[in-house]
Each structure stands twice: as C-alpha cells, then as structure tokens.
Length: 438
Image (tube, rainbow, N blue to C red; front, side, top):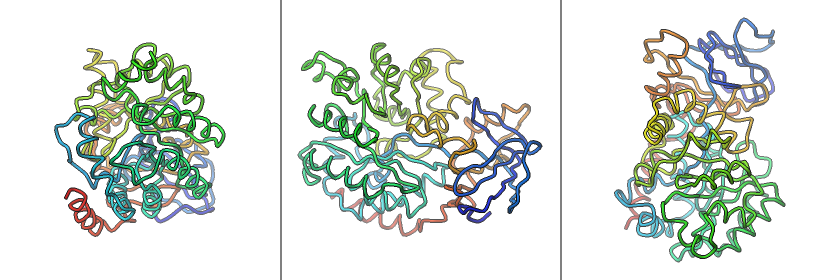
C-alpha cells in the first residue's frame, strides 16, 4: 500500500466502499482505481473494468477523506487558552495579545502538530485562516495535507505588526501568485469579520476576489450581538451588509452562521454562500445553535468544521458530526431533522461544495484521490447496510482511522501520521506556547 501518486493506475479492493455521488451508500466489496492523484473509477467490484496495474486488497471501509470547512489549526499553540470566555472577550483578552507575538516558526510548528492530528483523524483537506500563512502552507505541504489557505485581514492594535489592511490584502495577492498551481495549496481572502475591518476593505476584497477568481472566507453571525454596530450604522444585518459591499458576488464561505434571520438565509441561498458549521466551538463559547436544517432546506450547503483547537480543543470531525446531529435536533425539537447520513455528507461531499470544490469529499471519477480507510471491526452489530454508516458517525473516532491517502500518496499508516515527527512537534509547541503565554 505504498505511494500511488504517479501516472501508473493502481487499484484498491476494499471490503467495504462508501460512495457519495448521491446519498451515502456502502457497497461490499468495492473498487477504487486511481492515477495521477485522481480517481479513475469507483464502484462495486462486480462492475469494475479491467485494469493493468498493481492492486491492493484492503479490509475495513474505504471512503473519501473529511473536508474541514473552517479551521485555525496553528492555534494548537493556544489550546485551552481563555476557557470560559465568550468569543468577544476570548479574542480581545487572550487570543490577539498572544497572537501578536507570533513568529513564522511558531506557526510552522503549530501547523505541523495540528496537521498530524488532522491527518490521523481522517481529514484530507482543511480550510485555514491564520497569521503568517506562508509558514502554515509550507508546514501543510511538508505533512502532505491539502489546505485551502485564507490569510486573515484584521484591524486590531494587538496585531498591528502584521500590517495595515491594505498591506495584508497586498500580501494575500502575492501569496496567491507564489502558490499558484500547487497541487495541495490554494489561496483565498480571509477578512476576519464585518465588525473587525472597515467597509472599504470589504469592498476592496470583493473587487479583487472577482478580478483574480479567488474566494472569500469570513466569520458571520457567530455572536448574538456582533452585528449590532452594523445594524445601527447601516440599518442592515451583516449578511445584507456583505451583499451591499459586493462580497456575495464571488464565492464566499461564512463561518458559523448562527444568528441568521429568515431574510439572511434567503440572501445566502440567493448568492450560493456556503456555511461552515462549528457545533463544538459554538457550544464551548455558548455562542448558540446554527439553523442547519433550515439552511440546507433552502439549498445552502453546510459543511461541518472543527474551528481552531483553542476555540474548541480537538480537531475531531467525528465529534463534530455527532454534535451537529444532536444540536440540530435540540434546536428543532425533532429527532428526525438531521441523521447520520446527513452529517456524513456534511463532512465530505457537501463540505467540498461549501469550498466550491466538487473534486473533494467524493471518490467519483475525476475527484482527487483523497481517501481514508476505517477499521470496521469495532462497529458492530451490522444487521443491515445502513448500520455501518450509523455506527461510523455515532461510534466512530480518530482511533478507527487506519490509513490516509492524499493525491494518492499514503500519509497515515497504522493510524499514525507518516510525514510528521510528532515527538519533536510536541516539544516545539510546548516551548513556544509557554513563550506566547508569558
């Protein structure tokens, strides 16, 4: 089961295969053929075409890798900091003062350790917003993790050393040019939120994103009162204000999307905005419960996300899937409103749609060969085919992830990241975290 990211076709024969072209379906046994980092064919073994190339037989469940739609992964440097604080105080009293002291090597080691955790948990793509993002991207590449990187644009006194918003936008354009065409890294714009940057910066980002064919990643409606000033100044909700600035004329991912009115949801649906749902982070900060079922019923794609490992201490998509189901059911007081299959789709194919990437979160022909192999022995009893999906979501954990491939290359073996010296990364993070906290 060695690297298969070259031009020679390679076949994987799995005991079980999860397909996601429509609703999740498990076929047993199943086949995935890959070459040049892409899927050539997938489906039941009985229907597989002839293939001239090496073949590997796999036990367990072969499925698409998870797509993490909103993360600040280098925050492993700040894991647990600011416990018990609401988002506004957590940012201004704890996060930004420490992050203002970040150096590129800090971000490198934070991302390195975080990437190992993501990979070992079955995450093959992460949508990242963090400072010193060239160091983030380089660390992700070294670990073999696919990242959609959105350097933050943020106006705060604690973060003045990162430049003005004009300088931050210019640096993002430079970074997009440097990483253009890379197989694992793509670059977008990351204005932090409508309440943390001036209107002029939002308009500038919207214009440049349209001109450069780049997407936007921004926090929206995370806190109950974060839009009060915009409402008072402009007489608009944050989504309508973003529409007013032109931000919704380009592909946009809204992180959190908790405090949305019916009109706000209509705006998101009209402009095909994607929402990154962070149930565990929202719970930790008592931010609220996002209207996930309503968003999806209106055609708004929703992907589950871990957020940063400081706003929620784990980078665990299994946990996020379970939380998404339970919180949606509590919000609507309906035990049927969101099921395991929905949550699994929101962690894979629909998460890819949130990022505008139909080639992620699925193993259909033409998609990226980003795959994970799940140990199914603990997932019993399986009385009917749907049980395997139910058990995967409700009882699954990173401990069940045996092998991970990205671009057809093996990056996790036996449940451990094969591309990262985890012992050294932990040592580096421990030392650097103490300096940032001092």
